Image 1 (tube, rainbow, N blue to C red):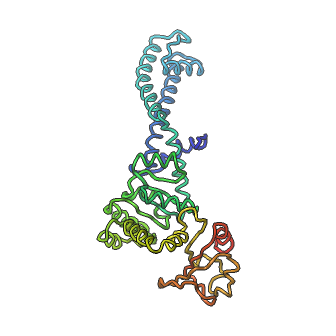
Image 2 (cartoon, rainbow, N blue to C red; image 1 turned 90 degrees about the vertical axis):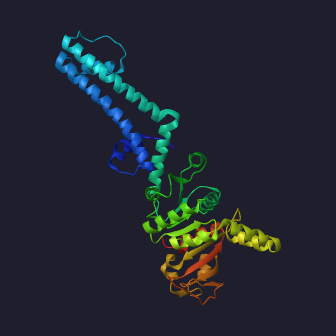
Image 3 (cartoon, rainbow, N blue to C red; image 1 turned 120 degrees about the horizontal axis):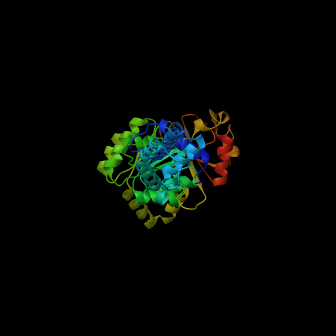
Length: 364
């Protein structure tokens, strides 16, 4: 991610105007930029004081005063442009003493920021924060372990926007250099980190931490911040699953239970498992299986039967089921089934067919 003058100007002019919690990425960016800005302003201040001093005390021309201030600041040891009076030498001495500390601070700050690609990381974080702020109705994934990696790959394959929250430095390095994913570095149990990931604008949060205590805490925080959020949470045992449900999770997943069921089914129904994997869009199957609210369909397809709306002919996807308001699924619905706004439809098709379905039949 390349820097340009506009980005640098934003870093120096805008960040100081925004307050952020000390746990957030933007706070860390602000701290680095504040140090750079302080060093820069101190250098400018020193040059300005030197210029005014030489003009007032020695009656130097402004450019000569500027030149003397710069060589005094840099301590390069060049000779004086004009002989100095006693007052001028005293002023120069004080200016040199002040510049020793200033120069040391400026050099240490610049070295600390730019060494080891620090400034590059700063700009990456700045761009990352800007892109996350533009997201709406996205998914937030808490943690980047084995399960979250699979979730991320599936969402990326379906081109669904998402943000990952992770605090492990090694995993952050992997996200930064090996993936194109958006991420927030921090502890997902902190409300300010959830806010930085756009929790108030998100539609779904997937919580995959290996510790159920953290999962429970995030579930409670996310539900309080965004009551309309759909929360999918990992649980490690049935007792914790009940607590996580009570805390506000819409769905809980125990990986060991699913893995055991999957392997047991493979014993006597291997082809059925392969079919389920196909429907779930696992791997490189080339099939997309989605549940879409009828309210997102264009007006001409709502409050009409499947036959009247010519849904199958228009969409060119397979209508697998209709989910009614009470949660009941009607599989292989008859053509007389009404498509009401409080219903969901389950459709199946190839990526090309699904892309055409979204373009032609959904509200944009």
